[in-house]
Image 1: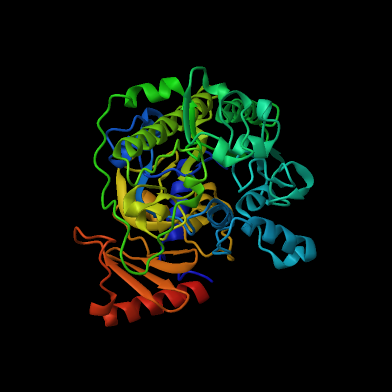
Image 2: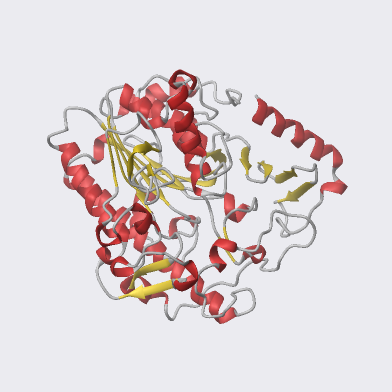
Length: 471
């Protein structure tokens, strides 16, 4: 399943870009869970995200970045391998099982590729699907690695949450999710950042930055940091909720459940939590409260990003480090009557991507070119001067880093159906052959299925989708 080589000048561009930075730059990959493009630098002025905004001012903002799947495990599989893959959360464990049977049959992951080429690779927090990168009942079994041969160190400081499973859905002061119906959907507790799991994750990441820049500094590093919030439940220190308490939010666009056959679902992940008997689809005040607590979690995650970048600067590494900020998928906050991900609408599939590297022309300029998560692996190889992997489905984005107006390419995503997103349309193909087609040039967006009116366009996009998925 290979993409056609859309950028003939990619390697030449990469050489130019790599030459402008120090030899063998470090990489800091920041993964944020369930992060919509709900950031000030993506045009949402009511969101407080000063640290990501400052990073974006130094980098390229990809306004139309699409993930491969609207669920954590499958999306992270695609980003970390550069390949299309399974559509479920067990994608990386399936790959690990295949490695155990025949390692030569499985292509290298992105961190493994960097490791093979002389990098020290470290992950902290939720980088693969399980925080800390292990399986087992509490996600801490040393003999069940999610990404074999990839990391020199893969860490999850659980603290009072006891283990990675506890940290994944942890609320303040060590509260662990046992029965979701008995855990509050949202929470805002007084205290510093360490009263929620991401505070501990960031502290450990800072220690790793110190170590990688000190005793381990003979080799370049690839450090991946996975921030859990704004994943459910929406818990963040009260100081991050304060700016939103009296804020008037814009109305939810197209909040109605769609008619006809779509990938709409009943928001099961969201509805499992204690909602005090309320439903945001029928209670506007509660819907606003949910949105504000999500926003507080975004600001909390933003603060962790700020700590990482500040420490990088303090260590004198800012001029020799590529920084990537990536959201693993989007999240519906009432659009289409959905509260969650797992659909193939725009809100589930579009997420933030910012790439910042030394020598970037015209920093802070956003691009409207469509790109995919599978493009990150070859892009980082280009920028680092590493050999280009010939087994990935993505392409290097160095032309767009050189010029925000450079062409992108249609994006493929999949769940229980498959979809192709072009500059103007989205096509969704269900397993039984039913088709949805939406025109993004008008105000209707993904609310009016026009497939029956445009059979020739449907057929052309179907052929393109098949070529991409089978190529």
